[in-house]
Length: 299
Length: 299
Image 1: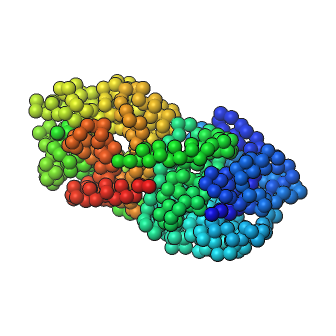
Image 2: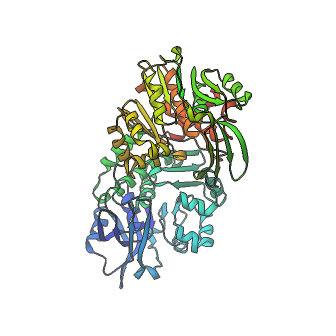
């Protein structure tokens, strides 16, 4: 079944201690859509400006991503610029130019409104609501978020939580939302806000699922070198949703493996700038790392 | 087979945001010895003063810990006092009174010198050497350490690394020792310093083993509430060594399960002040959490 993904489609200029790369393909929806595309059909909902490089449209197309709901408007593409420290967990934003993203209000074509799997990738909660309002009884709705929305759009986000099947956030955001230092205590509080499934991402420490069958401790794939972690969280949810939407059996049965798949796609994402590494991998490479993770965690 | 454990035997006064407990039984060797005692015979090497409460000697004895090499000397027991912040990963030392520990130079009785498993729990590297010098061809030697020794006794520690089968340290110490931010890159560098097995502890994020069969990603047992994490790392290595020393089969075959057992004993340690929780558990309770960890990580 196909996954509808809405989020940001951007140009990222990224600086690390070792290199600098301007105007890479980025944004939460780009990373999530490419990650999901290894598993099945993906419908991208987003907006770019007329400066958006043709080669990035071609990249989407090579990954067979449906671009019917990608608007190309007069003006500039959303441009984000950030710099990482030697410890890749610390980054600062240097620049944010919203461009055409500032007035983004997607209208879904009829064909998209019945997508069974919906991924509301990181974007303003009001836009996540706006897209969800246009969907006809989706089977499974997942949303990701970021600290910015907890700071400036908490009421919208809290309303959204009641409409989700699964909510994904990172450990510092979980702390911010619940004031709990303990991840498992935070999970309990977040369930009370609505979602049946809650996933807390912990970067290189993996992630934790809390759902109807209890917890799942999901490892991160061991990387000796992280080139650029931008988009790793988006790749994680994208890969997870791509797997969930296409695997046979119940969502409940598939959820753990879906997270493992997400974790593996995220590991590839970290090995190159932007989408440079992820866009070139194969399903076979993903499957091999999934098997390796099985070996690395068995006891 | 029995495990010989040398380290500190102390009185710990611990303050958390919720409670304060003075003069608890503490020290690296106390935590490690009690943890190891759930699996098989333990020989404790340490020193206490005449102020050492009789009830703590009784606690050791209830756990059937061999106290032949525990010296009781005129003077005061090593006393440490520390305070935790709401985020239990942050603590500061309020007071350190070495007492009889200042001149501690253990002489092992003949019966102890042929212990097959040796755990050099956290203590000055010179003392770890001193004990190791008295051993007759031990089968397996593991050492733990702390940032203090990296700061003031690095040369001794580097010499020790060449004499170990396994070395255990936490992630920030691994960073300090190797200047590597990446855990897996740090592991590679530490192997070059000597030990065949290296374990990096990551607190609530679990631990990573690197050994002849590659990596093992070891989870932490999920706790909703941490009462006092003091001694969790010592409990981890103690439980691990206790299991390794008594399990049938090769060390290589047993190592992953040994870490899981260590991780579970450490989880109990965090649920009470000092050794209050750990001292009261049973092997059955430990086994149940091991099974639960298996369920929590399977995919």
